[in-house]
Structure formats: structure tokens, C-alpha cells
Amino acid sequence: MALDLGTKTIGMALCDADWFVPSPMATIKRTKFTADAEQLMALIEKEEVKGLIMGLPLNMDGSEGPRAQATRAFMRNLQRFSPPSHIFHDERLTSNEAKEAMAEAGIVTSKWAQNIDRYAANLILQSALVPLVEARERLLS
Image (cartoon, rainbow, N blue to C red):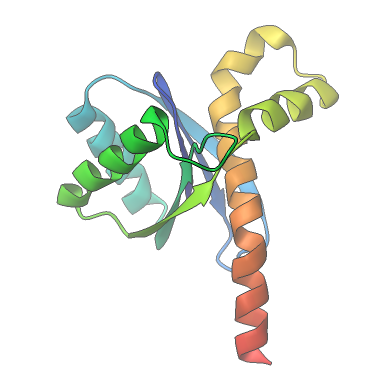
């Protein structure tokens, strides 16, 4: 499962067990951390998620700013709920790419806000899966 942690929502995307088909999943409207974490963990359990890919919002120069620090803090706090293993993945420009994809798909702009984080999570998942799948293929051959 990939997560795109926003200030107002958490976007999620899932892939199949073979790591080939990522799909946007859902968006959690953020309230308080504990409520957000409980809702997220319920979805992780329901979907039998084995690992998390957390989008890390780096600055354009690759440095970590306040949003990246907040993302790392969210994951540290989530650890007390015993989530599956996680990795961080560079998510620079995924929101812009998600907007472009929604425009190309003909999704009206009034629907963008409710969909952007889950589509951004899907882009994070897609880009993170490529090296993972390549590494798995090398190990199996």
C-alpha cells in the first residue's frame, strides 16, 4: 500500500500480490492523529497489506523540509499501532502528475480535490514498484 500524506487527507493506493497492478484506493479525511491511525490500520488489516510505501515530499533540491519532517513524524507515531514494514519514497511532483492524469482522463476540476491524494499515492506506488519488481526478477532468475 502506498500512502500520500496530505495536511487534510491521506491518499492510498494498493497493488496486487504480484506487484504488477497498482490502483488508487481511497482517501481518509484527516481529523486527529489517533483517529486517522485507527482508520488507516483498519484498512491495512482489511486489505491484508504486507508493506507500506510512504511518499516523502522532498524539496526540489532533494533536501527535507517541514512537510518531509512531518511525514517522518507521522510514521514514527504510527509505529505504536504496529503497521507493516515501510519505506519512504520520493514523491516530488506526484500531485502535479496526478492533476495532469485527471485532466487527460476528463475528470472535471471540481472532483480533483477529492481524488488527488489517492491518484498521487498510485503514482508513488507505480514509481516505487519498478525497482522492487526489477530486483525480485533478478533474484528469481
